[in-house]
Structure formats: C-alpha cells, structure tokens
Image (tube, rainbow, N blue to C red; front, side, top):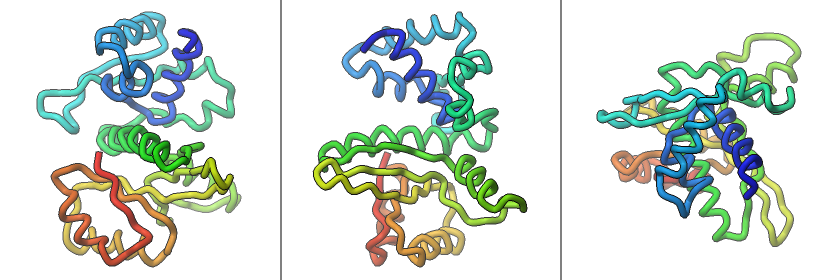
Length: 217
C-alpha cells in the first residue's frame, strides 16, 4: 500500500472509532511487521500534529498505548467524512470504543472466510445523529439504539444487510437480561461482542435467541 494512502486510512480508522490501540493499528495496517515499525510511523504522524497518544488503563491495569486523531488530522478529510468521526471521546467511552475496534478487526476476518465483506460500520453517536435528522427535532437520548451497526455484503449473492452490534458492558442480572430480551424481541441479526471472561455467561443467556450471535474479542 502507498505509504501516504495508508496514513490516511490509519487516520480515518482512528477517527471513526474515536481511539485505537497500537496493537489494533498494527493488526490492521502492518500485520506482517513488528510493532516498532508501526510505532515509528505513528510517531511521525504525531510529530506532524495529526495524532496524539496516551496510556489508558480502561482494559489493562498495566496500561495500553492508544492514539487519537487531532483536529488537524481531521481536517485532511472532507466534511462528510469528518461528520462520521467520533470526536472528543470521554473516559467512560474509551473501553467500549476499544472493544468496538477489536470487533471490527475480528468481524472483518470472519466475514472473509464466509465470502462476505464489512462495507460500513456506524457507531452509536452516528446512529443517534441520523435518527435526530430523520425526526427533524426532538431528543433522541432516551431512544434504544445499538452500540453500533454493521453493513455486510455477501460477495456471492450481492445481498447487503445490516447487523446490530452490542458491545458488552459490565452488567449482570436484570440489566443484562433486559438488554438480551430487547435484541431478541427485535428479531434483527445481532452480534454480541464480549471478552473471554464473560463469554460463557453470555452464550448461556443468548442460547435461546437465534438472531443473536456471540463475537469474542
């Protein structure tokens, strides 16, 4: 891939997700290289004022190196692309968005095996924004929307369909069951993204709901 084109794709990946870890960026854009190669390029983008970096402990107590796009980095893109960026991520949103980035990477690989392609990914803020524009006015904060929505294309049939995405949080009991029931009742294809430590519990809870599948990241 042309280095400059790759830089733009890296910036767009980070911008759309609001945040990305060094391992996620390496997996997507430098899969055959050492982490140092990836880091050296990201440091250049940081020096140019296009990225910032920090250590976060949302997922790992020892810390995780992450990168965020700057306003200067965002300005390299058209307004329509910038409008889809996840701006000013809050501390409370960091873990969810990092899990979402993991989900994108894993889902892309799983779909390739199935002869399918992930053609689009909308995050929760974007979904709410679209709903608000459709409604013209009114508060959408209380509307139940998925954490993300994936658009998938079957390369054999040409079929394009949408999948609801739930990024698992630290909830249990009635709250967990309520979320599962809501997705089950919708009867829409749904992917429940979770971590290995919660996978066994979640798979037991969703086993009677064929429209919900598990993605462990």
